[in-house]
Image (tube, rainbow, N blue to C red; front, side, top):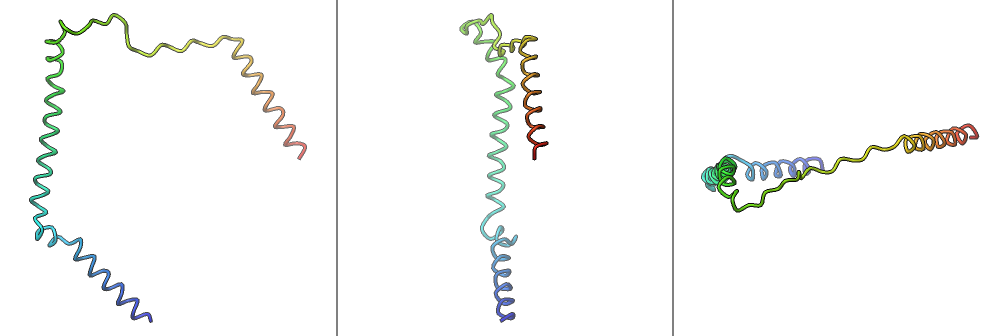
Length: 107
């Protein structure tokens, strides 16, 4: 019984080396496919970087036709809370702490 499991593991290891070996990559033109894939990705990244570099020039040329915005697009600032709100929050936290401490002492 132990010999059969060892044989099974040996066959599985042999099959795995056939699937993931460097010879498999060379036989099935894996290097050529990798080079083509890398060149496609490199070309796309070059095009994106060129577009980003040229974008200010394009926007400058299009500025006569684009509407001018006087207002900022930033998010509006959050209004500061009043002192009364802060006092109410502190009182609520104190009340909850007091009731929880009372429950803990009763147990």
